[in-house]
Figure 1 (cartoon, rainbow, N blue to C red):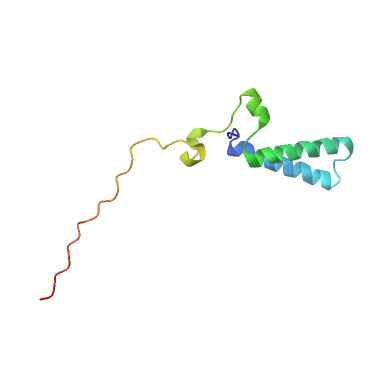
Figure 2 (figure 1 turned 120 degrees about the vertical axis):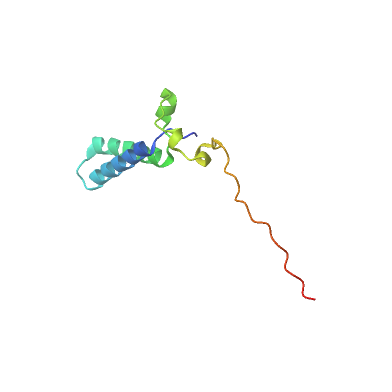
Length: 98
């Protein structure tokens, strides 16, 4: 499962799902409409936490930006030259007592 949701997309989904859940459990949305919205809220909450949307995958859409991702997240090696290791001064052996 490759991520296809940006952090903004994920945050919007999570906030929206929590708002719908609150409205449902507060009794502001009820009946069939409330139940359907609650199921949709659960789905978008899970996709928000996973960072992957099945519908986006089917359609070929992705809001995930690789250039803002860390290389270890995307599985890619970092680009550019490697930094040089720090130079250590040569060590001088201690003087022997005679």
